[in-house]
Image (cartoon, rainbow, N blue to C red; front, side):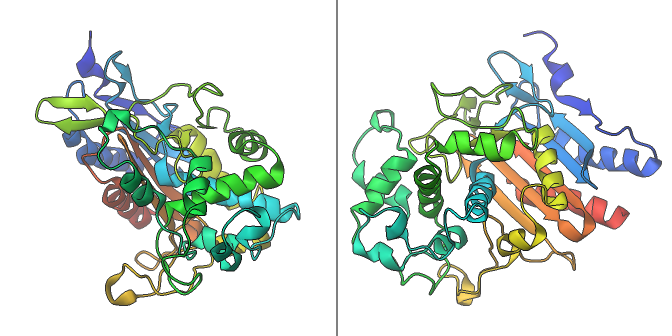
Length: 368
């Protein structure tokens, strides 16, 4: 591969730096991220969105180690749990359409669901207060003893089947908060049932296309493709190892969307402008649930809305999320009152991007 050194850092400016302040921010970004990449390593895409525009961006490393393709702001990464905000928005659009209600019992959407689903609502799924068992734990137990390469990928429909075999929730719905990928897989299936359209097509038709997020997809092999795709890697003793898919990578509702910094800037802008739903309709998504967290120290109340964590940061109102899956990590830190956001996407799992995103936020929130 020729000129690999030249693609360790690709410099991208959505808006040319008009001041020493912007250049200083770019220099600080380089100081933060350049030590993390080496010749031929996977890397990062970093975007700073301000007032609805991709104000500054930097990209570092390779999207594909085999071909040597460099990461750019158009590179599509698997978002993992950043996907949940799109699943939540799709659910909210169906509420807007009058086709579903937040307080709809699970058994109305899924009549075949066991009796324990009668007290679980759509709102419980959105806020992680359903008490549903984690499908990953159930599936791991079911597949116990099989070699990893012999474990088939599970889908959202498979998650529904697993949960329909359970008889009780972990806790009474609404009584506690516990992060649940199961809930968002069920939301994807609920969207399919109610809209009578495949989940990936509903996202495309109602969110991605209207917002001109033209290269963002909920990836289903054989049904669509990921353009400009980044592939995932992990670091081991021998260097970087291809690590792009796992047994749960085909589940869409909790983590199956691929997107780029370019397209996610449009998403942040749409949230600021209330492009899909009115401010009043969006309010439930940004109202934290009040329920004790079963896994938090002292069972402190969770601060979670619909697909977003909602605790403030240094006096700034904040909506944020992390994403973690096989070969990929991601982070978004959005400060609505400041009309400002930081997004970091990575195709490697050796460095947590959330603290990095907050360091970038510190640079820019101080600078405003």
